[in-house]
Length: 494
Image (cartoon, rainbow, N blue to C red):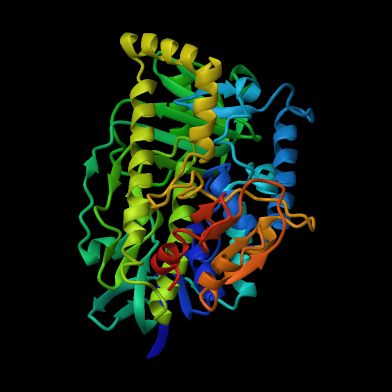
């Protein structure tokens, strides 16, 4: 029987990101994925700032830039070869598109994310491709066409039954999607709200598409979207969940939904990829039960509006990876692994409520239609547009880390140093980093032998910053002292 430190069930973006983080830390990991290749079904079309930063900090920026270039070419093709005019959208809430023209980017919450902010228009399949290549570089073992069929967990580890044998591991992580077998077999509580809609999203070949409006559109019978790439359509109908989500999605089904919602007699001649979805919203009460952990959709499910699921899952993986690695290697401070649930559960809870609110605002009754017009007016104010942009971009995400400095708990800004390098370039190894920005001997004495120290110059008021492996600030100072640093190191490093 093979032995691994960690078995990850699920080789989508979340499982691959976690595998990369573990492998970077020297942990032996096996990823098992039932699909033989990347799922071509259309999914999230963009990422938020924390996701882009996480990939940038691990050296994947050039690959993201190339995928974004290809995505822009597809968008131009949808517009007949023309580039989009005017300022880009800040995003949408319940299908209400909001322009970035009114966003106050001078708001202090828009910290400097560096070049990461330039690569947010990258879709889920592209992210999976980039992470797959990165995992291969790191020597991660990935078994496609293999799935978890069962497991037995004890205090020392987990014996995982696979469709092609068995493996003994110290830990098992379920990153196997919203219908996670790992979650079900482990007995995680998964409370939430029942679905009320049927959504369909597809890439199709259409006749009569000239009768469809671009972008997001409301009608008396539902909601539909057309674009921003050729053949992409989405419909939402408020007639309850589908009778059978597992049934094949046919051209007739997509065509019927389009006709009902749009009132346009389109004809679907070919379905290239398609999926159904609902607004089923559930979240595990804890992300850990002994030697079994959950990440991504296995830990939380919700409607896909805003593409938050991909970002939420990547955030789970980046938060969990270094904590699990330190636990396996015996260097983790007491209780470190428990902070995975403590920090990530509130973020997942927010995303579920954010998507529930959008579904409520999408309903087609008269009162909701009037309410939607009021919300639209509010979102188009300077304050409303900035609020939406901050929420969607992820720059408001903070963890409950103790510390008096304003940066503590937030993602680290991508500082530019006097030598021309940026912070992101110094985080490629996935290890914690202490910045000594004032040549502080007391700071270096506290950190000696405990964490890597980068002594450099920075044109700002910061004098010291402790950055966790996931890029979040665990301690910071602007007064030249090391007050609180020893406690922060003991909490997060050793």
